[in-house]
Length: 475
Image (cartoon, rainbow, N blue to C red; front, side, top):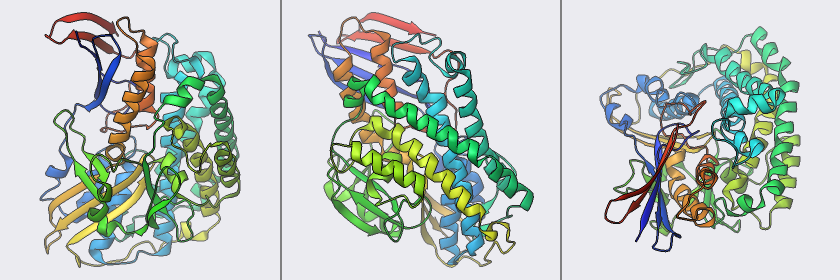
């Protein structure tokens, strides 16, 4: 008699989702699915709005990473105006994005994933959260909170708000950095860098502490996509797109977001509201690819800052192949990116352009079909707007990072379930490993925040005739 396990909701992620694990007659996992159960329709209700509103509107997609949509939308607006923004405006946008990377990656590691790693995947779910981490290691928790706070402070000092700053606009940005704010940010660099390096040291030891998890959390061949600079360096704002395979071979290079429809397809399934993007030349679902920290470190030749490059070299020496194919390593890659972001922030603060007042190029609507791309903390983000002559949005298509990771998340969930879930008695820690595999991608499904404190979970074993054989409730 076949059975089904349902994890609903998946906890410590941004948004609402559930997991279904299907068992065969012998109690072994047959398959598993990651369902996104919310529908918000941002693309549809952008229709009829003006280009000038789009940055502010799309930033509301997410309360955790509003800067990512703000910048992607502003870059799309630059294309519509057919302008090159002032150098100072680009540098300031880069500064805000690096602050966003810092705060978002710190949230992911310290608040969402470190409770599993530090407290243990099988620890009590009532305390396996940020509050349990505070109780177990208050100094580490304090450092993580302060690191995230510093990233948010950078966003606030530039955009006047930590969340949803109305700052980047088509053609540039609204204001620069004051000298006082520049010194305020600079004063926290040593502390922030020390915290990031300490966290990376903890993360490195996790592979030895959890060898079974490190071997099976999404270890499979796939493609990887991300932006790279003109010389192949790590990039988060400009550059062009590169795709590599699981061996490090460059499948495609120098791709422009303007032609994204040539290489990114979007499929859908009737059991999830999240789209399933795929690399179009390889078809669906064979064109599975990953984006985000793991992918960015796979596609780049180097970072371009000294400490991060040193860590990248050590990271690559640790790998058995040319690239990282295990989603467990998202955490490691994420922390290297925090170090890269801090070094990048320090470098930008030395440039007097960040205090310049030449911030905006003025123009009217000159192009009607425009695409912008930027790297969000979770991965590559596309905004595509079709406009009328007055700048009104006729249609919008947004391809977010979590969607591009959707096929890989589903593959990861199934792989972990087959390794750790053994029926008919399902231990809570087994199911938590499935959730932890999802959290490795740091999925952001909506603007809602992660669960804090007690984490509700309902798991049902259901027979093929619909009879509920067993229910496990965690609240």
